[in-house]
Image (cartoon, rainbow, N blue to C red):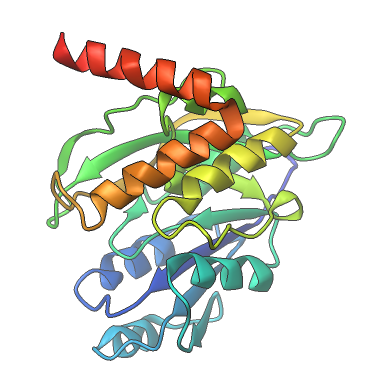
Length: 247
C-alpha cells in the first residue's frame, strides 16, 4: 500500500429502507480498509430501518434521523456532516463490489500538485436482490472523464463518483429527480484532477426498467444539459440519440 492514507465519508440516505439497508451495512462493515466513517441520514423512517441500523452500529457509524425535504436535502445534510477526504454516496441496497474495494481505491491514489485528486471514479455492476450479478451498467465509464463527457448522458453512476469533500457544494434542490446529474457536472467543472480507478466500485441494486418519476427525471436532465451545454448542442445530441435508437 502507498503512503497516502485517504479517508472516506460513506453517506447513505434512508427512508423506510428496512428491505434493503442490511446489505449496505454489511458491505461497509466488511471493508478491509478501515479509514472511513459511515453516515446514515434517515428521514424519520416508520418501518424497521432504524432497528436494523442500530443492530450494526459501531464506532464508524453515525446515525441522524429527522424529517427532511427529500433525497437531495438529506444528501446535503450528509455533505455538511462529513469529515473525511472523499464523499461516497451509497444508497440503501447498493454495496461495494468487493470487501477490499476501498483498499483498492486508496491504492490507486497518487498525490498531485494540488494534493489528492479532486474526483475518483470507476465502473458499476448491476445486481439483483439476491446480490447476483446481472450485467454491467449500460454506460461504460470513459477512460478520460471531463465535465463535457456528460453531454453523452450520465456516463458514470453517481455511487461510483467520489468527490473530495473540500470541493463539494450542495445539491441544487430545484431539481427533485436528477440533481445528482447537475451536481456531478458542477463538480467536474471545478476539478483539478479527475482520476479513473479502473475498478468496478459498486454493485447497484436493479429496480427494473421503469422507475417512479422517470418522465420527470428525463425532463430535468434535458434542462440540466441545456444549462451546462446550451440548448443547441443539447437538442442536436438528443436528435442523434433518437437516430441511434431507431437504428
